[in-house]
Image 1 (cartoon, helix red, strand yellow):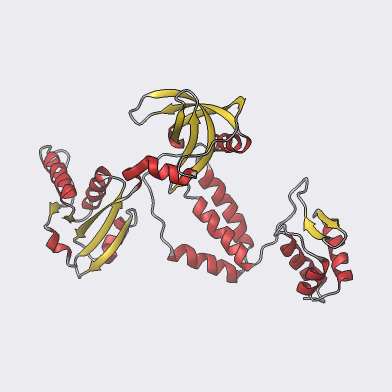
Image 2 (cartoon, helix red, strand yellow; image 1 turned 60 degrees about the vertical axis):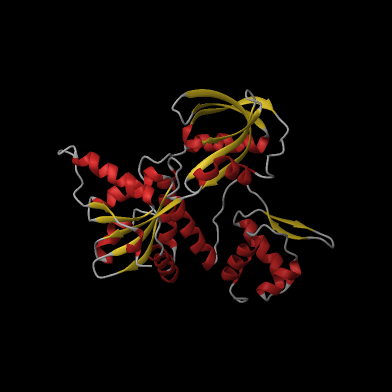
Length: 339
């Protein structure tokens, strides 16, 4: 590496992109060259368009500055893999347009990866399963997210339309303090000026966000921070409910339908899989069981509340001969869990 100016310059750029201040002696030691060679390599990077600032004195050194344009980035192996995996995860985010943008960027990066890194990324993608969500799950508008982020940063009041949980619409004027991402849901923690109190707002129910022009001094969020306040506000709704079911099919057949469900396999037998499923509430769990039952028979083992809800659903469907499940849904006592 020390005798390869191009490779050395790329390694130097990788170090500078951490945006910390590097002393000349530190860089020379890392690159195994003299400080004079480091200065020549710094000049070479500047000729290529990278804005490298230099300061003199005891506390002097080199730092990559923010430029007027974006020159090519250089990643080491671990950074390249991290970016590719991060983009794949972002493609599943509940933000409008994010999936397409992330996939475009991911395609460009994967085309440039050497074979050894492409295999690492591929292994991660094929070995890690992501839980998919229903298509009607709330999607956040990217422009709304940007407006609120700027308002939180600059301490500027925001107006927006908001659809409450009961379906009624309202107009709000708030002091936005923090955005919180909770799984695929996004929330705004804000001081509601008209209600003179703290409120949380789901971003997928929020529309036409615009800066109101007024400035404010940030207040202390109850509980110490936005995450704790959101947890206290949501209460039991923030916790997932669990249930145990028996899916009467071999594991290889059940996998196709279970991939859409937040679940854990408890144990398997030749023709049965005992599965722990999770959902936001009893209604979601009931629809999860119904979805599985469209393909294969299911027994509800626990809890009794879910067994009752599934029994009512089955009875209502049986009362209508034109609407029935292709699978069988029954309830079972908890001793059938096999644990």
